[in-house]
Length: 221
Image (cartoon, rainbow, N blue to C red; front, side, top):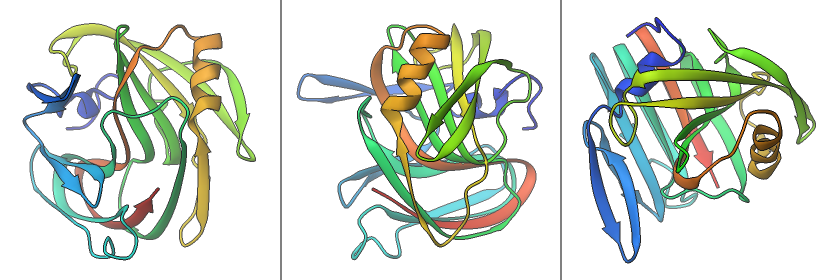
């Protein structure tokens, strides 16, 4: 679905939630999306309409490898990472191939208590209706910092009002290694926007919406 308010389409993938209990950790996952684990990584493949397929062609050699092929999607959000995520992880990635149309490639995640949805945009744009609150320099790039409140919108805990925190760069490329020092972004968000809670879903993902078709092969670590 095309966004009518900021990242509304991204939120559709978490309209219905389930709980996975692992030891003493309760992890929320979207039950309207295909999710699982591969070579020690959590993965998600959500598609609202059209078709999307996620596979792991190089994971035997590079455990964080994934490929997503999608066609005429209303909205697709697919990728690989961790659940729960971490506030101190340095996320490495390499986009080996990227073709067709897309809206966002980067880190996508949630925290709870408080409930926050966050984005670190490496390619594309995520600042449709948000307010700029400054910038942060990290890993050799300057990211704009953006904030937006969603009111009574779907989330990983059901319909809720919550803030979205975003770091926008968008200048990455393919076939080279990059790093995202997630603590730099989270510290900037806390300073400029407000508190963050306990880590939930944290993946390196592609999002495309509005009847787009395309392909990505990427590796995260």
